[in-house]
Image (tube, rainbow, N blue to C red; front, side, top):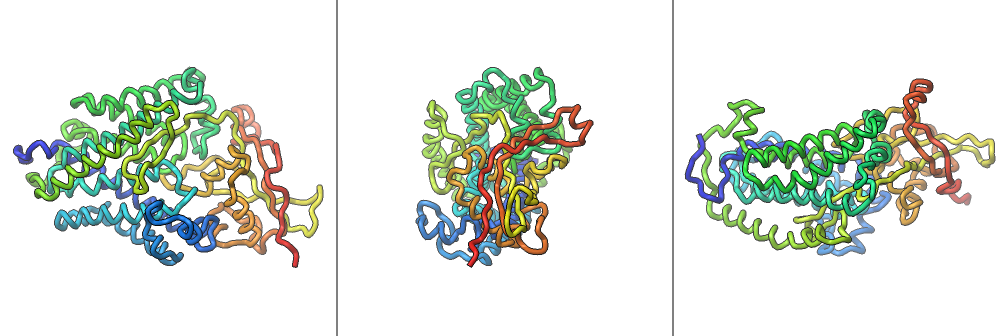
Length: 483
């Protein structure tokens, strides 16, 4: 039974949506913190490709707020990442909600502060839109309240406003960008050229042209029409949310975009009122006791949240209205109200960096080169692309951008090659296999390959998922200087 006199600041009809959002968001936090714990040392550690100590030495606290500005060591980073993992797991189980209101708020605030600290020193390895999306979602979660309180109307509207900017911004940047979004042919290329294809991407790529065009039309509806309808009364808002959920599920099946699609689905489901959610889930799943309004100080904090979002929203709104719209950008160092968008331009041909080593003392045309294989990105043409999302393989993702810039501004890539010449054990753990298990190679090089999905006939004949052709030498053979 839900108390009927909670006032306009309360939205008791969204208890189930809030519960699902909080538990699912905690699960995404858990994935993010575990990924950070597993990958930070070779990428950002004291001997990483982009070391945090060097970054904080040149970038001040207010440009990049982080507890690592106060102190950094690899051991301290691991403590932060695993502490965040443990706290996220506690929130998945709903443990902070068993205490007073301030306990729940403190738990969500701690998650946000810990992950903000990681993102703000993560440099290029944390430059993706789903990082700011997680932080903005996590900040709103601080003010949503535990399960015994009625959800705040402002919090529910804030989640819709976030989802609107996420989807509508992505839709606008597509219409303003590549002409293939307007002639409905972008999906002819995208499944093959996206950063990390998944196990079904080969099949999506070979769908008929009319289906690819229908995919683009569906994308435009989900990103330009449905977001506007999120603010309509129920059941229209629930239907708009369902459209977004369906298109995001299609993206989950067709590729690997870390937790972007999962978090978008979670945001969309928070827009469905309990009345319509219970058409799908059990009627028994509802408030266990009569809901009550929160204390006045909490209501004042929620109102302050609304004012803060309203003030900061002028930047993303101005960006969405601009012909020079930016993708996935933050306008404040705390990532509170951001702008979103992706694939304003779609790559038409896929190029991959293939790194190889050789253990010969002298190299010539007869030298045997052995390839380093990554966990997620295309390498061996016979290997089917794996499904890794919502886990984020940061090194694999960043490797996708190297051919787009032809190696420009990729100092971390040269550091990567140097670490492989060293046989750096933490870095080698980020790869699928080490072709030099005994001792490091004497030489290393990086080549550029053109990759395309095999045709159905080629696949039947060879079993290969990819066909590749070496096109250029990106980094010539290197070796450590001989003393």
